[in-house]
Length: 178
Image (cartoon, rainbow, N blue to C red; front, side, top):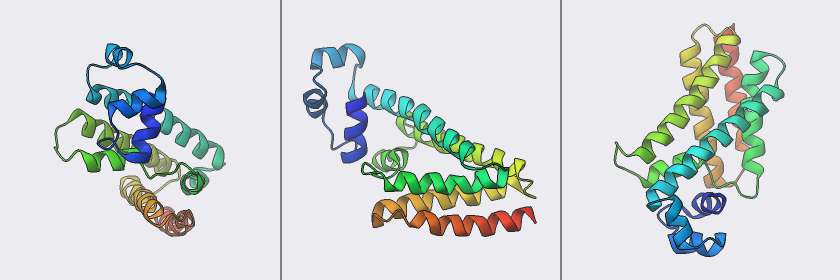
């Protein structure tokens, strides 16, 4: 699964064949298919595992990044900047994956949507703690900023976009908590 995750993130899901995963992981096809009946089952397992790992890491770093609720909201963008600087930053796996699965009712698409919903929910909790007059609207704005910064950083290969997003976030937070 670790090999599949790295290959899916770097190359995309459709562009990554089972033969490549088998070859690079050192696992036989027989063993792979003993655990996963299809590539789709492997993709689902990888996304579920990555969801837990990525969200927990995000939340831990945000919690450590700010001493106040407002500070934690801004730490969202500090986290993003560190993430964008990583050598293996290929954008958001969930955004990239949903781009490959256009059908609306696939389990793969549902996992991607659930991840985004949970991240936005966490941001909304921080907005409530920060005393935002309309926590839901502020959370939507900040989540949109984070998504936009992620895609822009992926395309431009410039982690500095996180600083721009953080400045915009600060203005939104100031207005919502005034």
